[in-house]
Length: 318
Image 1 (spheres, one colour):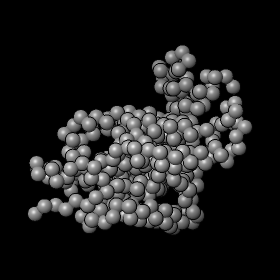
Image 2: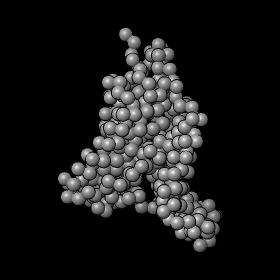
Image 3: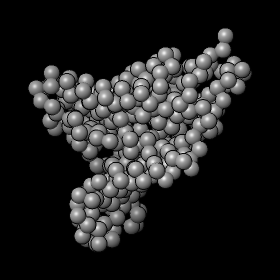
Image 4: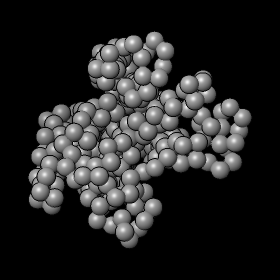
């Protein structure tokens, strides 16, 4: 295998595995910028993957090749609705953010597998009717050397996520909405004193995290696993949280970290074609992304500056 083919394989696989992490990490950024810790991203991804898979199987004949893309919207809607449980419990009922998120992570797999068994009589859905397929950019793929590597047979959702990362950065740091969102995560009392509805902004942050996390789960089911089962998500939500922390709660930084974790996962699939790496036992390549997640959390969580009021209970003044 020549260097161009090897790079094409690595880039293609990296984008496939990074796509769900990008969307989910962006979602976590919105929630935590608003001051609400959302470790329930794992459960939100599960519900997004479940709903997208069910939609894919049920409506593929009606929507054809658009089915997986519409499935992203379905996963986002269900993820947003599911995140409302976390928003209500932490914002209005002042529940501990970690406990509330843990409840989502415990409830989502049980609920989704129960519904899958009720619908299909098994713990998984089976192959989807219209999964995502590789795509190529008509003109860009003809660029010498770099065209085939970056723009031929690549993941469409990944490039959508990369573009969305820059849009989210602009929203968070360059718009009035973003300024208000960040203010309630840093100094909610000061934000309230100038007329900002702190509760409403926190709801916006959590719901946006649910929508983007649900889309991430939908990509995981439709682009990577091609089905839904108990192991479809299997830790990707926590990996997305690590990417968000590694990226310092910055959408572009979170996207870069997600690409790094996606590259680590891609090695488990393409490591057999890479000199030196092919001699490493496959089990180590498989667990490497999870080891990297732990290392990143241990190494960077103390150095990254989280929003000042994150995880704390805000009580609206009388």
